[in-house]
Length: 424
Image 1 (cartoon, rainbow, N blue to C red):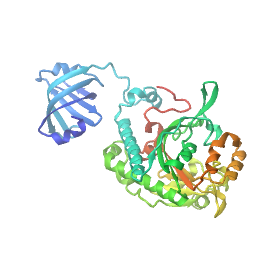
Image 2 (image 1 turned 45 degrees about the horizontal axis):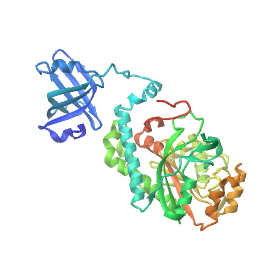
Image 3 (image 1 turned 60 degrees about the horizontal axis):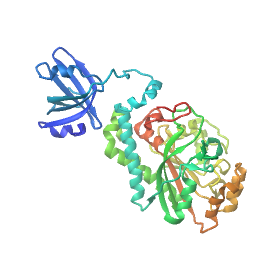
Image 4 (image 1 turned 90 degrees about the horizontal axis):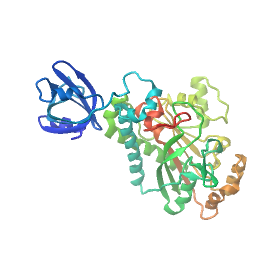
């Protein structure tokens, strides 16, 4: 039986298998806290138990199978205890290298062992629910899941963050986003989504950046900008509600009070980029020149005014990717959006309507130092049956970090990759 189901079996004989999470020994007793993926439970061997001496041989992270009867015990860590009848030792672990008060860097060095910790296990459970909920949301709306290429010949989000890869006798790059290929696929499938790894060679040491990360992305034919924003906020709300339903205990273990997330329901507040600058000056005395991108510090101050994500639209066209179209209402801005998480967790979604004007695309490719001939296949989409379309990308690790109230994004992924961290 999974330990998570132990509370349902009071008075019954069960068998569990797991690992020694904690242990304490006195002259008369051996106290074992056993863990598995479902949680922890206490098992106590008294001196008169025939396997008392065997139990004393156990060490932290030893694996074992225990058969016994469940009883309630408020003094035990989980409120339940197993009175053991039979112990089977599967493996006696060597001295476990992780003890209390270890540095973050050491824990990253031994990530292959630290991933067993209850905190990381809880975060990975939340992550699993986030992935499940994103898929569920778009499947229920008739979207198809499409797997994009990981190796690409061109940049999607700017040349400066490309990872170059030797591809036989040619140069290729690790994908920054599926977007360009998604735009090709919507002319057949119309509504699509993916969950896929992405790579950005950002020379950043912050607690919010990874070199390898996962994005949940969607793209839809016939979708215009207002509908895109609605889709994004409804999806994020669905994810949050699903996590509250399935992972409340995991959130509590991580120090996140589930009640704090209950307000995350549509509609989300909206600001234009210009309104965001006005808010920063009015409330925080920060005078940001119009045309400058918002930094982490500005995003954090904006998010402090809201208890759920805020959507910021209409960033300056000059600082946006080539495929984001001008907004006719505000010609200096683009039909684009970022969604900023509350509590200082930064951007969790970036998206836009896509430019359908082939001449504008060529102009902006040149402005941004790209050669239009490298994008001929992409420009073909504007030559043959072009339609309005939109899409966004959601950063899985950013969302997990926010929901779990993590102080570092590295704990939102099993094995983080950063500028300095590439093993284990």
